[in-house]
View 1 (cartoon, rainbow, N blue to C red):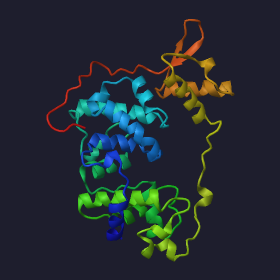
View 2 (tube, one colour):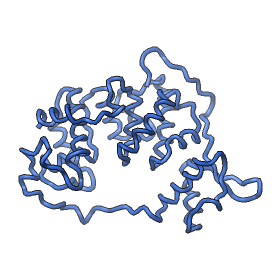
View 3 (cartoon, helix red, strand yellow):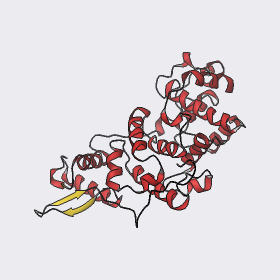
View 4 (spheres, rainbow, N blue to C red):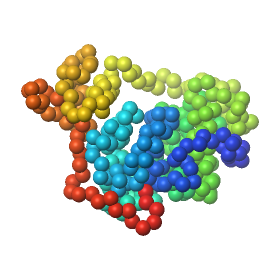
Length: 306
């Protein structure tokens, strides 16, 4: 499996900026946060803009919340942008501007959980680290366990099986994880997998079993979008990103006014918008200034930063 997949990866890997030889740990961390539940095609242009503007954690640490949310644009789940801002400030304050290479220190950063910490260790520092995302879980479920799709929630059995396949050498283990991700994204897709072009076809347990259907299909939930609170929240943020300042709540286009007001309130709680009264007395909202507490000096320590 290792030889076949890594050989395939050598010739089929996408040319992504956070994988280049000159990548930085900061660039990898930003990419991993942006890629959560978001396709590569949407992430890449925003990632490039972000890294041009804030190439290191100290640069981002000095930004305002409004600047960060505008640059985040339409990636969705904008609280991720705030967590990156908080992480940049923590890295600047606690780690001299360097993304830490220690798993415990990584997981102590705002918004960095088990998966993100493992991905940064593997892809930024070349460590042997178990990286299980949706694509990896799907490939291993089919190739090793003979299932159409993995269970809705990650299991200990999956982790053990994946760990048993992880190469001992750190850089090779990182490439193995990337190759599994790439295979799941390009070939072993959730719908209509291209089994004829799969480098693992010869020993795939799912193919050998006759491609049985998804045993967990009844437990999977599909999320609607139209008319949801998520869409309403996105409409408010889109209006604010397009505006120079505050926006009257009444001018946000949304049919259900009660839902809109409720969603504005949740955005305030999440720190994504601020309430204010406009000069004409109407209620309005704006993106927060969100300046860091106290002055932030962009000081780059000796050696590579980020």
